[in-house]
Image (cartoon, rainbow over all chains, first blue to last red):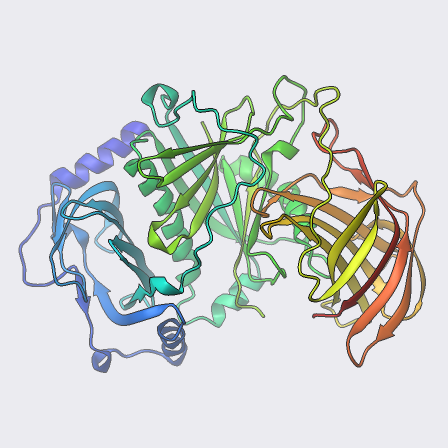
Length: 348
Length: 183
């Protein structure tokens, strides 16, 4: 699959010929020309009036292949006066309406990612002192929101139980990262609660596309951190989870999910399983099953639970290992200035 | 509120592990947290233990509640959740037996979890140890102000995982609580 990935990138770069047009990759759309359903309007209104919304503009996003050349993309962002110059770091291109483009800016610090799917477009742009998120309103219209960074929490990341950092191991060095890994994530969409929740949204794909954007931010962080041999892939399907307790109990449900999803995970050959549910667990936005709790057979190293926090390239990525022979990593990533944290478990 | 998408991330990777002799993790006494929805206290493994507490009604509308007692790290991250479910919403004494998933079996079910890192990494599941008799008594049920109070004694939990880094048993004794019914 490593070769496949390379082939896909080279195919993209080599075959797609840019065309110079006056159109923009991101085209601002006046609200007067936008026709939205009532639920789409409600969704756009909700995003536009959130406390951390500085500005919100309707945009449409075109086919990236019409604007890039050999991995170089120059484009304008509504609200930004200068032309943004960027260089691709992770690309997946299937069709004009189905691609992922992640890049770093070359004329200023920052990163960007566009996730284009037939059902909608998501993404983000991180610029010095600015952060923009793209929310899919429907299949053709998105909302470009500039986040008011003053409204973000200043709380940092807390790995409070760290027992020390092993400074002798630099996980950013190639010799410590010589094993190519594709991390296959299986996204289970709990049925019917998520469908019910989707039914209330302007764009029922909005949440799933946002998940894909989160996964892509992991790939972007790998690439930006010089870890070119790791990649996260995903697939999504409906799942009838039958373990919900009364009242809901996250600790028990995560155990039930592990039991119920094991066969499916093996069938799909997934490394990591994520389940989306619309049920409301007080005090939690989500939870992961800790690998240190899985102890099927004795060996040497388990139980020490030593965390190692390593920063690569300006702290964009932190790899936190637990002292487990299989070489598991917890990866937590600051995705731009919005300080959103993504966590995933990676098999080295 | 149904507007929250909860992300469950499950690691199902098989990991070989071993508990070193004498290196068993001793669960610290964490902070009780804000106690804005109520309080709970007990002896946990012989040490004084305090928690933030809240109750929730069953989603199916039946007249039962579940109660939760949570502790936190100094930074406010979740650390422990002690859950007792299927409690009739009426003053009385009830036997604690079985897991919280055993709905409407006539007993109060118990479950205990430890959370690590920034509060969203679950440790091993702890089921109620049915070899250890437990009783919960509701002494106050105020359905006007949605407040319940009571006490429990000897709620024993057993680690479902063998050869775990975490303790094999966790025992709560001489517990008491008063809390709001928040849902």
